[in-house]
Every structure is written in structure tokens, then in C-alpha cells.
Image (cartoon, rainbow, N blue to C red; front, side, top):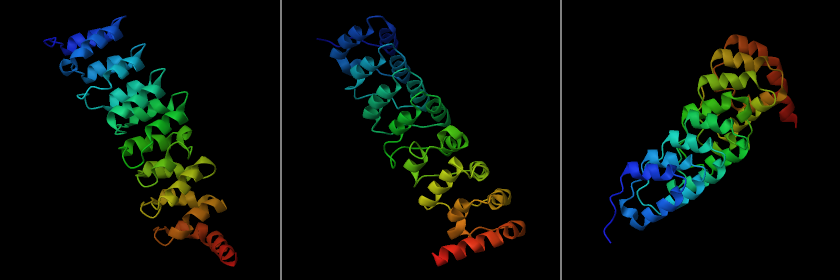
Length: 242
């Protein structure tokens, strides 16, 4: 039987029909001629039965490149977890995580589960600097189990993020500092003097525990040194006796 000439417009309209699933099933008898564009994929994701529609697409060999906007739409749907699972099967975990995508994840009711779904593959998920900074600057995303600890090798923080951490050193901010230390990246950042001053003004032993090993590499201004000299020396001496 000769393949039906199925255009992108026809496929898109089929997805939006009440009986779109049945129509797509018929189209799939001629899968080679069924074009799945990003527009069609987005229509499927936002369909009331989007999961079933995506399963129909699953065997197609010519799915479009997954964009950040498509991923954003997926997270914004009621069945985000299931849809993300299917998208990961299509795109082998190469999900494009932009700042907007991360914001959508942050606003989702199952935020922790969404993060785990997005970041299953530490090495293979492209995480933009913008995305990481947006997460860190939002206090809701400082949970070590959801984001930072899953990217210990790939943290790239801007100075604004580091300064935020410096002002939030107790509680979740301290967790951020710990994650940087565990990643081996704490010596790679050039902390601004204002940031270091905030660190030094904080009287928490936990903070000193984080910065102790890299204090030589940090270019402390005279004011910072004066603020921390006695406290830091006392802490190091205590650690030495222990």
C-alpha cells in the first residue's frame, strides 16, 4: 500500500483531535512518512493524553532535537514525571536544562522528584551556568539531595552565586559550601573581597571548617585577615590537637 502523504500540519491537527490517538495509530502504519516536528511534539506533550501520544511516537526514528522550551512545557504538565521519563528514553538523558526549565522544576509540586528525573546522569546532562546559578540563588533549591550533590564535578558558579552563599552560611548556605568542597572546586573560585569579608564576619566554626584547607589560596584583604586571624588560628590549633 502506498504511503499516505502526511504533512506536519496534518500530524499536528491529529494530535489535537478528540480521537487523535486512534488517528495517530493509523498514521503509524506509515511511520516513515509521519513527520514529528518540535511543534508536533509540544502539542503531544500538552495533550490530555500526552503520555499515550508520546508512546505512539516512541518507535519513530526521526524525532526532532529536544529544545529547552519543549522540556519546559513537559515539566509544566500535570504528568511531568511520566513525560520526562519518556523523553529521557527518546533522548538518552541529553535533556537541555536552561534557567527557564529549572524555574519550572522549582515551581513543580514534586520538585525533588523532578530534579532527580532531570539529573539522573551526572556526566551526560548539559547543565548551563545560568541554570545552576538560578538554582543556587533560589533558597528552595539548596537541598543537597536534589541538585548540587548530583553535579559535584560540574559546578560552575558565578560570583553572584558565591556571594549569596556567603550571606547564607548557616543552614542551607553551609550545605552549598560543603558541596563545593566535596567537588574539589572550592579552590578554583576567585572570591571577591566583599564575599570573603562576609565569610570572615561569620563566627561559625562550620564555615572555618570549609575554608581552612584553601585559606592560603584565597587572596584575603587586610581587613579579612584581621577579622579572622585569632578565630582561624584558634580553630586550626584545636583541630591539630584533635
